Image (cartoon, rainbow, N blue to C red; front, side, top):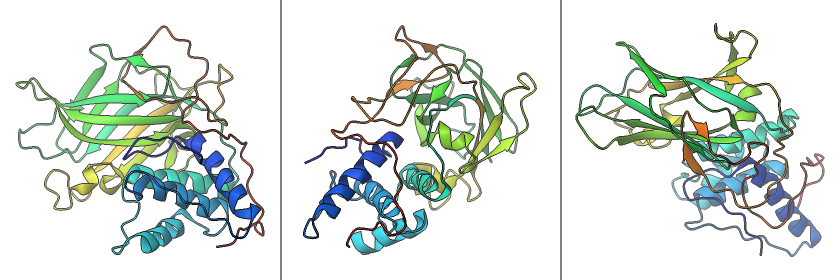
Length: 307
């Protein structure tokens, strides 16, 4: 038995996928009678994400769409297998590693701006957004006054004025915090990986920002159906059909030997926002938990296990 730990309703840490695929493949190819049983709590979302990645690894499916559709057909009656947008995004990320020959490496980025357009329609009226950014260790603390919000009829722009550079798997939570209320309400969240954004997977390069012309800038655009929780608003009650989020990030210079090719230890996700670091060193962190760790080694087209 091998355990690959990831939280419910979330995608796997990107470093966790390759060791899982290698583990399953080694078992299946060891004997034609071997069967791999993969499960999570409900046996659908997290299981499906990893199984779809294995279908890509073993060359049984050529694209993320093919793998996701195949799994949905085999696992459910309504073809709704992996439905959480961020989990589907990570299958697409892994497909890019397999099909495009990308070599994963740690990439540090600085989130500069988040744009929502058109603005959400909320019961309380005007949206007053707050962001929380999370990554694996080391953790970060949220100082006050880190957001500069500007709005007009067509969009809401949130500028992150002190956001600590981030590595690897990142989660962005968006809240509404009305001025006359004590509690903020959750709107939606999404996960992305810094390497793939800087590599142009699901993102695009944009002109450098005026205050830092020497740093590359990229824009990650996610429509309503690519945002966790917002994708459930099928009647467009809060988000219009053309609602989208644009995240502007800058690629930071390489200043450390951070490497994301191994998965070791336990990667607990800790809430952070545009932030100040804790006293822990920012040299290196790994996420995920498994017993067997291997380097990325794509298969040749004819190296396919029995089905």
